[in-house]
Length: 398
Image (cartoon, rainbow, N blue to C red):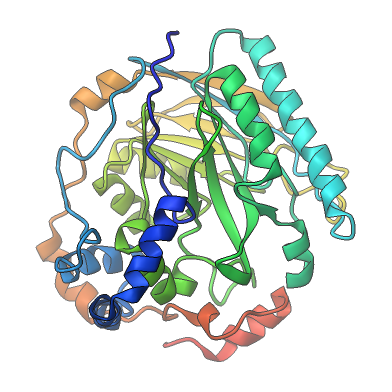
């Protein structure tokens, strides 16, 4: 395969370009007022609806308006088809008392598995995905422990993975807990995409959490909505990485049709989804079929020797699903790789973005108030799962 990379389009809020934009945005008082007025309406809508509403509300804000384009923005493809692989590896939780050593060992495992994939399949991959937490694994840690466990993106781990991406001339995706100097004391859950030039192409925040549920306290777009929009703009609420292998969205969110519809309306061609535990195959198939895009679902493998959970948390079942909703590659429960060829050029030639009949639904969405309003993690950062559950115990609107 010839190397036709060119320069990469960077997606995600924590790039140097976006940091400059952030500073300009926060200096503009008219922009701040506009954001606040948009949020006044958007807070009563679901996440996807809020982003759509804000697009029309922010047309005056230079560089921030979300311009709908049925032909959607895209880059020239580097080849007519892409070789896509998912490496299904175990969820190996590290010791928060010695996180550097644990991340180092897990990173070495990732690099070894990348080499093994090349040996096993041969050829030149275009994209390889890992599960939600390959660098650190999953544990019921408190905030202080999670901040020790969390990686810096970009950082030492992405430098090493970037060197491997350059060597293999491919993209590498994975999920990770992360910390960010612009968000002190917050723990983020990011979908990370490294490009074949070795740089971080995208770092997509998780869009929303499970408010009132399990008690996870990673900061998401929804829980930090007003400040997030002020810093990065509405277009980054549901970001799309426009690369030379297709338009990509990365997420660990499940069961949210409006979120995936918004991704598809903005031109997503591949949903790169990740999990720790199990793959909701019916959801993966439904989202691919409903919005006519490809899905890669990377999950952790079965691993009975988990540090915290006897029997492990992973069940495998990673899958690649085509736009008709048919799985074209499915893994079993054990560690291993799956592979599929995606005819991305032929797909793009025929693909159309979703066309919801919005007038049918808008009256309902305009009067709807979600169970939990956005922004609660801007007021208080819970210290643990139990603290999170207690914090949200009296926050429901209904």
